Structure formats: C-alpha cells, structure tokens
Image (cartoon, rainbow, N blue to C red):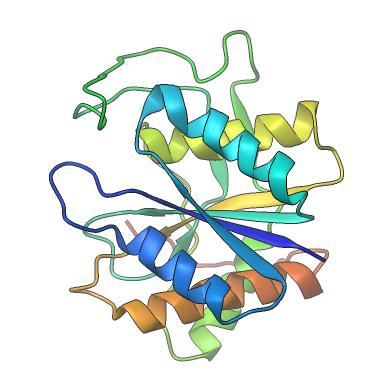
Length: 201
C-alpha cells in the first residue's frame, strides 16, 4: 500500500503553508506514505498532482490545503466544477467563473469516509468537522481535479481533500497527527458512518 499526501506551496505572500508542512511531517513518520508539494497555481497544480500519482502509483491520495479562519481540520465532502478566484494565484492568474474541467460533471463527492474520519480525529482530542464547501480557489480545483482523475484515469484509486487551519489555531504537530488519522481511517474504513456530523464554517 502506498499513500500520497499533498500540500500546497505558500501563497498570498505567506512564508510557509501548514498544509505542506504537515503533509511532509506526517509522511516522514510513516513507511507507507510519500508527500508532494503542489504549486498554488491554476495552470500547474493539476499537472503536478497527476505527475505525482504516476510517479508513486498510490492506492490512496489525500490532498491538503489551508483554510484560513477555520478552527480545526475539515475533510471536504464535495468538489464543484468551478474556479472563481478572489485573489491571484502565485503565477498572477485570477480566473473568474470558469470550470475546472470543461464539460465535466457539476460536482464530485469524495471517496474518503469523512464522517468516520471526523469522529476519529475528535476521539484523539483534536478539533474537526465535515465541510461541504472547498471554496472556489486552487484547493477546490485540486480536489475536483483529483476526483476527475479517479473517474477517468485511475478508477482503483481512492482519494479526497482535507482543509487544515492556520498554525495560530492548531499546532503543526497536531495538524500532522490529524492527517495521519485521515490516512489511517481511509485505510481501515470502507463505508462511512451514517450518523450526523457537525459543519465548521
């Protein structure tokens, strides 16, 4: 079993990005996991993701991104076929109201057990909630693009997206631990739980 964890390069003038820092830290703790940093650029992010999948041939992909203002780790349930950039990406691009994949489905649902994942993270004493919006920036683009790759090229692959908070709201080590729990839950839970889960906005 090989697991691919991804995070993003710093963006919007930041010196670091906890999604990549935590992903690389979590991968370093495990023998079954590799990490890849994705550029925060609309034109480059999905080619980099596809290249990492081809290079490592994982059975599970968990992409992580930063969601400023959220209080905990939030596994995303649905990706939408829309890019609407509030700020430019690292290459200066700022597309508005364009699809991630022209003529693609309106949305994809994750194949990760998000409710079971939230329960497991909370059981470890860390804040978590299911999220039903991954936004319309590069995070959502990568989430949608990953699910489209699974639907069209890698049908045996399981994957999804997780937003992580800023380090000021959650220590980096705790974020990395939560990502490990995301991986462990995906590797051991085939069907998600049917109980309700809170939503963190």
